[in-house]
Length: 432
Image (cartoon, rainbow, N blue to C red; front, top):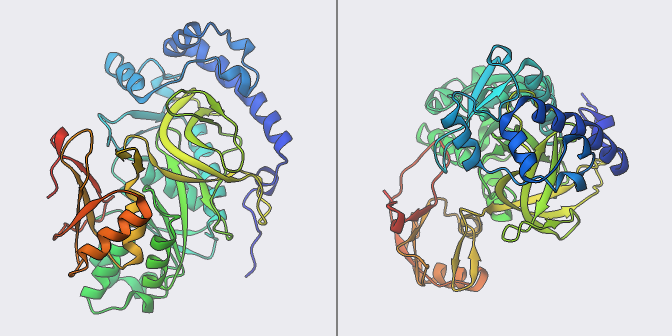
């Protein structure tokens, strides 16, 4: 059956001028709501000397100070459970999700019934762009416990009309056993999980390519758009891979690759306004091809726990503002997190870049070990299955990524969840 090209053609193909007008209309209402209902945001606007009625455009918005996760965390500690940045009464909150807490104590984020509808609508646009259709049977293999990526993304996928199988984590062997009964066509998971599931299938004597999976939809980890990673997983499964992007503090999923596989299309036009800033100076950077910086998010339609000018710490490169697919949401690539990057004598290194290089060579498990700060070469790189290629690999890292490392063979743990790649020994982290 031939399906429509878009889940929501009007919004997804909206001319940029119309998108800006929509953002302005929604922004004014959102800022007014935050000012009226949240002591946190009243203080924030007062700090910037801004009246809510004067915030009518993205340019006006820039006068409001940034919001950080540390501030939101402090707000919730002082006024539990949702903090004084919440803009809805608890009786109107129908669900609470937690952030992952990878950089500190998790945030509790509330959703009203309308928030959940908005989340599902935005997610469905992204998943449709990534190739999910009503005739798909989707194995949802993200963690359902507490986190936005579980139930909220489930509802976004379900909104496309696809048949959902809520697997979660810890059921990999059972999934292989039930494969012929479920007959899945698509898998939604972290970037790490398809490798784990393939190994589980092989241990059961099953070739992953023979299972007939057609679509790998990945999320939650940088590196999904790296050529080496994509080729490795597509060859392993004989399936098309598409990357998606979301942030639990904002919406579960609000960007995805289309059939062109040329960057993540922004799909949250009526739910979130995106800024790009210089991560060091905080100065605004124009969203245009070739630009890079930190992504900053402001909700346009969030009732319970909105954010204004939220610093994501995700560093992105803008790849384009149009696409042969017809979608007008700008296209971008996430290089990694600013708090995940490390610097070796002036060279910025993201773990995802190391991952891409290793996957080109069929190496999937690794750990970067930083003994001290500032980081000095050689950096220790633990790699499973390197099999006598240590010097060759170290030379490849130096040639492509620009830093000196020493490669050591290691046996590293398998995990269904996100893989931890970077260990800062000087902060008390030690590889297993």
